[in-house]
Image (cartoon, rainbow, N blue to C red; front, side):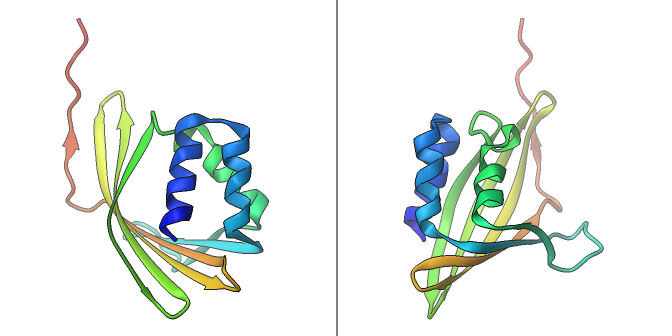
Length: 133
């Protein structure tokens, strides 16, 4: 799973089409991304279905590494499930917004069949950017 995370980060950083296409090898055709966070009213909302949708999501400008950086702080596996915890930093004009993110990957036949993501923004600081002169 760390290889997938590294491939996704490489694609987000480079923006190169071949790097995005390399991600598909890790994904089942009908992969599903489900999201939840403290501020959603709907538990485990299905956000994206299919490898094309996952790759398109990673291509989005909001996921470019200049806008969003992530650091993996923990990874554990049990059977077909892999938990990856990250610190996610969204870079905005007002400052950097830091979130704790946990991804639970379900792997079937060596491909990612489901990604469940939990984001917790509660109580995490916004880091002010220095003003440009």
